[in-house]
Amino acid sequence: MSAPTSVPDNLSLAAQIENLLASLAKDRSIGFPAARDIDYGPTLPLFQMLINNVGDPETAPDTAHTKAYEREVLNWHADLFRAPTGDRWGYLTGDGTEANQAAILLARDRFAGADPVLYYSQATHYWINKTAGMFGLPEVVIRTDNTGEIDYDDLRGELARRRDRPAIVVANAGTTVTEAVDDPVRIRTILSDLAIRKNHLHVDGALAGVPLVLLPERPVALDLDGVIDSVAISCHKFYGTTITGGLVLTRRSLQRAARRIAYTATTDTTIGGSRTGQLAVQMWYVMRLFGEDGHRERAEQARETARYAHSLLASIGWPAWRNVHAFTVYFTTPPLTIARRHGLSNADGGISHLICMPGVTRQQIEALVADIATVKGTDQPSPSRGVRRLVPVAQLPLSAERP
Ligand SMILES: Cc1ncc(COP(=O)(O)O)c(C=O)c1O
Image 1: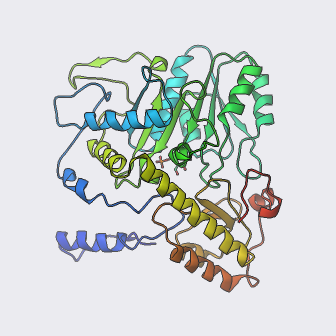
Image 2: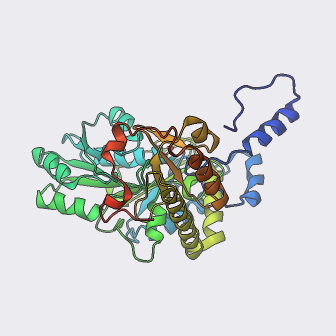
Image 3: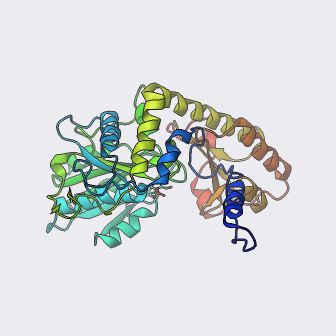
């Protein structure tokens, strides 16, 4: 725990900031997915001023903005997600939640008046429930298998029961707890078998969308040209930007009609109004700094660290799992003192995970496993609800990798 729990009142303003910086810099948690391998130093002077990318990325406000950089970032990602050249649109958001929400709002508006239904798996991040509530969408929650991947038979059954209603389906490219990946092509096939022509297939790629499309042989098709209709990513996760951010992409032809706002001199296509312009520059910077090959290499190194973590936990006999291509290793929760010391996040049901984002070191993994080894066989917690749904690595289906 590195964030201060209260604000000391006996320090000067300058000392307060120094104090805060020193305590935040101690954060080495490995349970939350934020890359720490990138030096954003050259971009930091931009934080001395207000830069506001208010409104649509393609319309220019009269005040200071960085939309040219934002458009480069969007285009680069549109290429990665294979959006048609003449039919692509998106924007940078305040976080991954807003990026997902922008896509769901767009989907809802496509089928306005036709009672669309929102389908998603039980492993979907909690942004989904509040979004369904905000946008008045009825929800159908689909089961997952032991690894966290959506149960396609359950999805087919639920879609079949409501064939006459438009379907908004959310697939995950990296679930929050196990980094499971749903297959959009299988979902498309189900929609087409059932002749549900009014459909929107969105991918929540907040965690692993970019790392997956960087793989030389893509394990799933996350193509905006023909397979999926929208995708969201988080900027502070794989890219480790120093401010939170998200990115949503879709095809322009799916976008709702938007109003021109005279006072901002922009078009109102975004959920929020003002948007931070520094994010666009950090994203542009990291895109140029590494290029596609550099980011592919970062992702591969992270997977290598995850393989190492998985094998180390297996070597001490602690139940642990890892899905194919994942940075995440999930395992039976160790005692709370250990979980806290290493900044692990605890999911429901006695499962913890560590996420080997770029910047996580082998030493951090070794320190965690050494701590867990000291309690192995003494007060190892008995698996609870969630753990029983999971099976040890040796029994996992092919989609999960062995150490
Ligand atoms: C799969 C997934 N989707 C969406 C989100 C939400 O992202 P944010 O916290 O940036 O709003 C998260 C955050 O952890 C996530 O793991």
